[in-house]
Image (cartoon, rainbow, N blue to C red; front, side, top):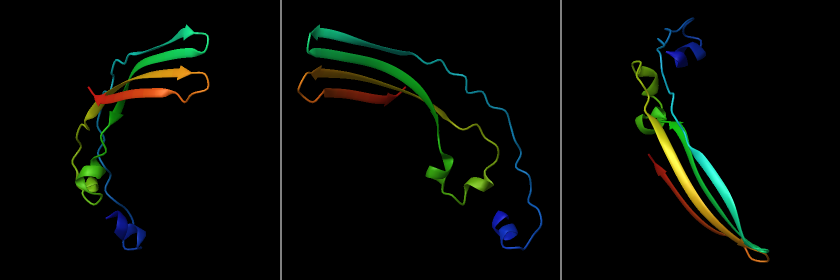
Length: 100
């Protein structure tokens, strides 16, 4: 319908009904730096975050406007990394992300 309006073949479109969502989520983040000797450090970090699924990405762009109101899945993600840094050398990084 929206394409017809843009093309000049209509004057209004149906309203998309809204709904209520609750995406409250508890997240935890912590990080630290250890100075081993004067020119060497180790960094460690753990962090969590949230993300919403993109229905158009897996259902197709034309389908999304025909969906009935629905609760979009939310994802809780986490990652941790460890970095070793020595003066004069490139840092060594180990990283591991995942979906909780």
